[in-house]
Amino acid sequence: MTGLVAYATYLPRPRVRLPEIAATLGTGPAEGERVAASYDEDSTTMAVEAAARLLCTHQATPRAIYFATTSPAYLDKTNAAAIHAALALPQETFAADVIGSARSAFAAWRAARADGGLAVLADVRTGRPGSSDERFGGDGAVALLFGDSAAPIADVLAERSWSVEILDRWRLPGRQASDQWEERFGAETYLPLVRHAAEATLAAAGLDSADHVVVVSPNSGVRKQAMRAFATASTTPIGHSGAADFGLGLAAVLDRAEPGETILVLSAVDGCDALALRATDHLPAGRQRRTVAEQLDDGVVVPYATYLGWRGWLEREPPRRPEPGRPAGPPSARAVDWKFAFTGSVCSRCGFTHLPPVRVCKECGAVDEMQRRSLAGATGTVATYTVDRLAYSPSPPLIEAIVDFDGGGRYPLEVADARPGDLAVGTRVGLSFRRLFTAGGVHNYFWKARVLEPPGGSAGAGGGAA
Image (cartoon, rainbow, N blue to C red; front, side, top):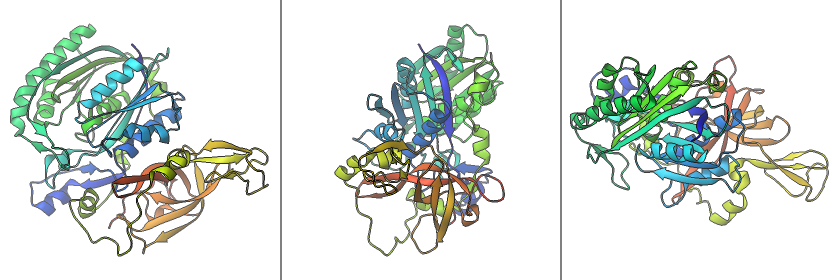
């Protein structure tokens, strides 16, 4: 069996205030904020963000990608193939979906661990207005890389699973939100199983207790009771996040665990899955660059009405202009490297970078003397930008910038998660994989610029008000 070699997480920047939800719907008092994916994000784009962050810091080519989610952008089409393309991985790398329920995440974990591959877990938790999924859920992604490396950041000491058929949560195909039974019913089934799983897994690992205990479940009663039962218990910092839940909870612990400390993960979904791990001496050097806590603090509030529009619960008047055309298969296939991996061409004779790729050099006129260059992980500088208050956007105003990339290349891009004050000539930006629009049942994925260092200090804002 292989060890856990690296991990990385992605939390989208928009936040919805729970007091505003309570005031709007007349529900009970609430505190805090909900992490929400932006209008141009889905489980695929967030998975790309998490996986790209991992591969950027840990140079490796995974043998396979296993993508788990309860909110797939497509059915009857492999979503992991888009992630594979955006990461510019070799065609020989196997890519597959493991979708349907939150427990699919453990199937991805097991497959990646056995294969020395990459498990990518991502979810957009959509609940009816006022539901517990809306108030206490969260959107995010995590990537977990396994390998035969001599320097794993955590060793898996034991892994156990128990399955139970229970009708406590379900969603019919085509429905936008899940139905749930009264939480006490699920808690009565899950809690004895969670206690048994903890005892059996610790015994299998040769441990009396664990330094850190992570308990996740869509059932809030299970989470509350487990927090009382285990002195060192924690849960996912953003609330229940579907297939990403146990991975985000584990990542938050890896962000702060010390070498030699043990971690027990318990996930109560359609049974109980349990993991016992021990952090190694390589963990401090192998931590992700931005912790879950840092990403959680780096948010910007969006109005509740804006969020409802993003999720389709509030239908607003569409723009009075022609609908965009559906992306077609043949041209998308011809431009897959450009569209998904932001791959340009570099002239072998003069070194000029072309975006998008071309056959004839604009600088020296050389023909078919090009080398491919993916700029998906590149950074650049804003040469100029415009704030368009007339163009339609679910999060106006629409901001576009001309970006000069480090090492060559210039291209105009929409700026994601930004407000006008975040940009100036010279602002540093990176790239973010987003969904530009959906037309005719086809998602049009491409790249947007993302502010790295906004003028005046903190990391940029996002999710502007409607």
